[in-house]
Length: 257
Image 1 (cartoon, rainbow, N blue to C red):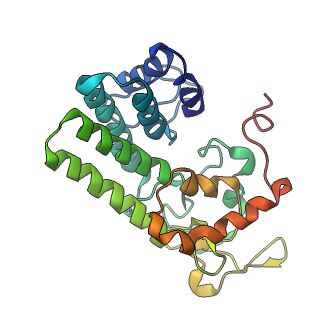
Image 2: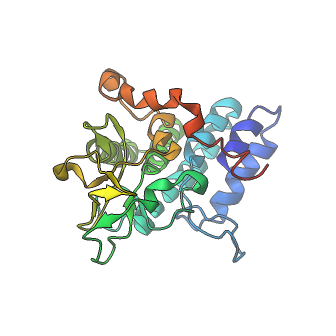
Image 3: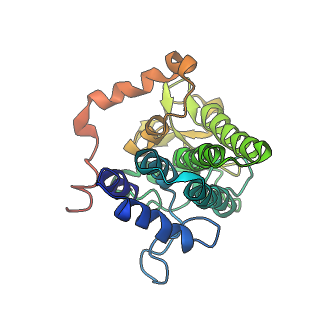
């Protein structure tokens, strides 16, 4: 997992951090990374920030152009593969229909918010903030290809892919009404007019978003994908973090560690 990769990159040798990247990269088949490959339990293409953490590890240990190119190929495959698996409407955002897919399922409350007009195929899926991790995979691949001396056309291809994902997140998942990032409905569904007797705070025209606050929504900030010159537009989303009791601490409590 990327949290382990972030810790082990500080060891004196790259044995553990690079071993993790090589293991998951070689077993991915040039596509989305696979959790627990070869086993039927916990076996899925979860979106995680392995590209971002892998680039951080490379920045610590280096290894020259050969390693940079190999890692770039892994992260490109993961980013492209995530979109192939989970972007069912080609809007550059990944969408899930089950609450365990974000990993932090103790706080994936957007999946429980009722929907309207959710009968169409695919309408169970929710456009997710974990799309930021896919952006991170594309951006890490871009930087590593550049370090490796790849053709500029290849670098530009990854930059274009990253920019498309970033723009989709900022345009689609930001709520000017609630002044924070939210998950979105898809395939014609909308968030219901009320939930548990409480009215939906979003106007009817904005109910392609789900007005539920969960810690996963902060993946967008964690990936640093927001252009620095636009910080004033998005900084208000941090205000909810002042209410720590509203969020479970992950992973220690939710994973019973």
